[in-house]
Image 1: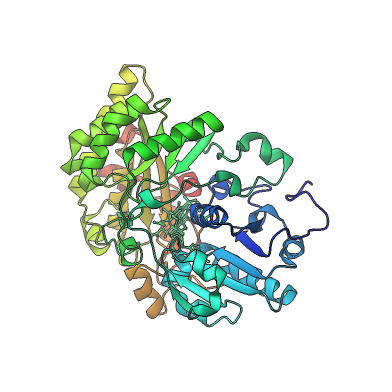
Image 2: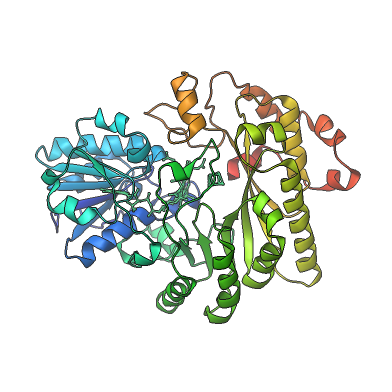
Length: 468
Ligand code: B12
Ligand code: SF4
């Protein structure tokens, strides 16, 4: 097997090492496409550092298949940098321990979402020398130049607007690490994942979601930040297209469908100025689709918003309230009906049919069987849908996550921040019921609440969970 970097004996080129995180082997022989996606936090900070003359080497836990292989690449550095999310924390911890064994005088600087929401957990680990909470773009240079000028827990500083961010130099991202994976990867663009043709360009056009869903709650830990201009987003896409080729786009924003004036400008300029009106994946909310239906229709029809990710989460008002989703059953049904019509219209004209990427949560503490049946009924009313179903996970950083962790009800441990959609995550939730539900054992109850037409729409089963 060919492993990146293709040298037997690894010799550091620079003194600082950026370690890209993910499960071992994800860039060698990955389980699915999402594991191969690149890390914008690492890309942005590494670009800033290199543009300012602070050069770094790169390794990736995803590009090796054993800790021994990783260890070879960690030796001989003065500093290790990592972007740690909760789901990469176990890998970050193990890497830090290996790094310190090999480089006892080396410093480890970490930042990222987990460092932000679970800094206590990281402060208790002696291997982490500096832990940065929040955005790092305005602090990374000073911190790396002279860490001793900072306290161990560093307050990150972000840009006022994403317009100030340099465009990521995508060649600073890790490469696919096997010959097989290299073929379809299109590095430094990203591989196809079923939403649009390759090469895929992942981009971000906004950083913060202003809502406060209790299972997510982003804006409690990312300060507000302006969107980049529509022109600069299109310029970057055209640049990437000229240099590497672009087949489709994934807009990684937590919430793309916000700021109507920005979206109106996008509708006006993207079809005219982009080299091609590439299809894209992006996220919205059912309540705002209902609030701004004309905007939604124009985005789908005119800008090729072909995969619309909506966090429907539940088909039951009781649960939506519990989640502080600020969307109702009626909002959800409005959005579903609208996309069914837009899909039918596209089909009749022989055009590409827009699909929902429909995020659904089951196993929410307090959910009753009838709530779950309503969710399944809602899903069955979507005519054009990729269901993305997962069991609710109490992540640190979210209000409900913190509460369940404090009550000792979370089954997610620091050694394993379960991130697989069908893992059991909360004590007291009847997962057998949900597995039976997804295996079709309650289809009679579910179908009894549906009209004849709705009943004919595809059945949703356990395989949908695997796709999430
Ligand atoms: C894109 C994205 C993804 C992509 C990831 C691609 C990749 N390889 O990175 C995909 C779609 C694969 C994904 C999947 C998941 N994701 Co996700 N994802 C995001 C999203 C929307 C954007 C991340 C991003 O690029 N941000 C922009 C960059 C610039 O920010 P950043 O990486 O945080 O880096 C900044 C700072 O953290 C800091 N920083 C970072 N590193 C360092 C290092 C140092 C030394 C310093 C000083 C500073 C610093 O500076 C950077 C610049 O400001 C975030 C939400 C968000 N708004 O960030 C969720 C988010 C990270 N995901 C989350 C979750 C839960 C998941 C899933 C588990 C969801 C699921 N149930 O399936 C899966 C897990 C996937 C897996 N592999 O296991 C949570 C993580 C919660 C947590 N506590 O960590 C988030 C925060 C969403 C949320 N609010 O719940 N995700
Ligand atoms: S779940 Fe979606 S809408 Fe709710 S806060 Fe998170 S990103 Fe925003």
